[in-house]
Image 1 (cartoon, rainbow, N blue to C red):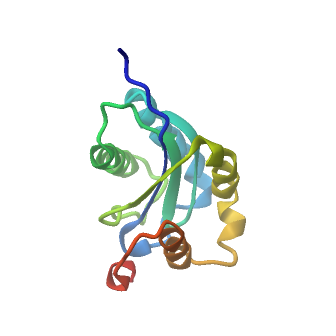
Image 2: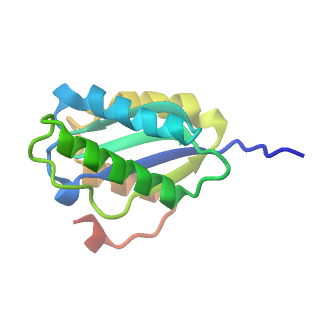
Length: 148
């Protein structure tokens, strides 16, 4: 028997203190670097995008990967990469923690569209408001003190 999975993860994490340090001009470079991490971990990237203070990743994980280890690899890898490049000069680090949501493959196209539209989306909504909405829709209990 082989291992078969069909789990799509929508992963969201932010910069330390949600500082607006991820300049749009260099998003593509950051996202390509993250994509490389995913490929090295045998994950499939459906979509990646973000705003100046956070990143969204829509992916499936290789069955041997633990989600927390995977996100740790992304955060550590990108932090080191950012320090070697002059692209996000005010970036300090990533915020502790993350949000991750599982979805059906039937939701994939809607999620791709949602993630693609981050720039337009955040003209009307802050990251905090977006995160509260995502957590609420997923029926995840949360403490507001961790969203400040």
